[in-house]
Image (tube, rainbow, N blue to C red):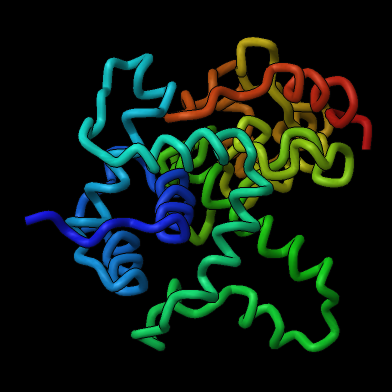
Length: 258
């Protein structure tokens, strides 16, 4: 007996979730899969299977000869082709879709509209709300791309991790939500990268600026945080390769320039 057919809105939401969970964590036991299942009024196994259906279209997995589940619907491919690499549209569409689903568990963060949460800040405009929600979506894409680990240190505490823009948010709106323009970094390295104290070379190895290098000679904490990683290549992204032109931009326009 076939299960309930997935409609367009459900597939958009599932695709958004797919890109925010590392491939190795698409299990029905994953807490985010379980929360999504409650929201969609489906079983965790059904949601997990749909996420694995999307994996069959993923170029990153094809390159590794990972096939995903092969017997999804034709609509899976339609949704994939519509939104893959169209991150702002996917973010907007998935957030709009959330409003159409019934809230069945008020204690579950995923089931509460993120937009409603932001609206509690009475002074924020619609544009500010959209920006905040977009940044939240970008964070999910980037942290998933690095398996929820800092690309420099390997720290794997989600609350200590940020999604760092390589080309700053204010400089290129076409890359604001593109995961190829993002690094998963712990809070201190995120701040250092954002302020131009560190950058990456063309082989994605860490470069430490003179300000930190000099201070590290006097401060062993900075030495442990930065100079011991200098010259080492960052972690390899799971799904989206970094945009090397963006890395070059950071190296020439942000590093030691602010």
